Image 1 (cartoon, rainbow, N blue to C red):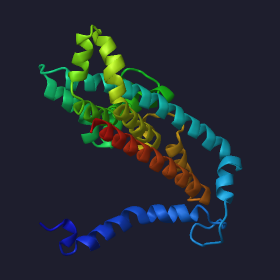
Image 2 (cartoon, rainbow, N blue to C red; image 1 turned 90 degrees about the vertical axis):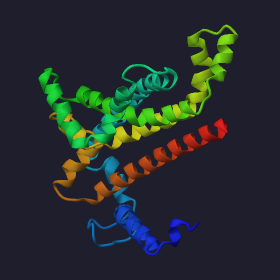
Image 3 (cartoon, rainbow, N blue to C red; image 1 turned 120 degrees about the vertical axis):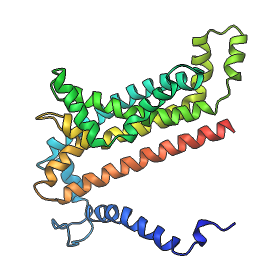
Length: 267
């Protein structure tokens, strides 16, 4: 049986897709090291725009926005992961119950609904209950759409763990809570770590929902970058974008490695 690479035109299509996806990222990364203030003319290699991010005139704004992004992402990922663990245990170990299919659909709904729809819905909800937009509304919205990203790796890991370990613990007079804490939770750890990292980076990089529910005077790093770009693209924006890209790649890689470790442990 022939592999897909033997089909006519597959290689050209694959290369074309890779170029379209990654060429802009490569260009931004290269020009973030440009010594010139121009974003189109190469003036030599320099770290000046990375230094400008931390010491330039816009540095206080970017530092405050970065702090908001990191703290929101940490809180949102932690809360979403805790909820995802409970949901995964209920869905995978809970057996059959009424509305299980509907519950699964609700958990994964944020993955299927367009992000702009979620953003508008969150804004309308917060306005209806009289909650002032700001840090807390961003956090609540991020927790909501991070849950399925945390849930999927955790549920996948839990599905691959046979229940004989918990049954053995119960036979040795462990309580249900002890069996979960001492047996199941350590076995789930690679999936939990993968889900947390994925939820963290999704929250850190989000722009659309954040822009709708952030309120006046509240900025995260993506919204701060967008505000600066509206005044014109500057080389320091390329430096910030490159750093965010590096962080995203790092966290996605760590999530992938955590999944691989979990698969090897299961095997």
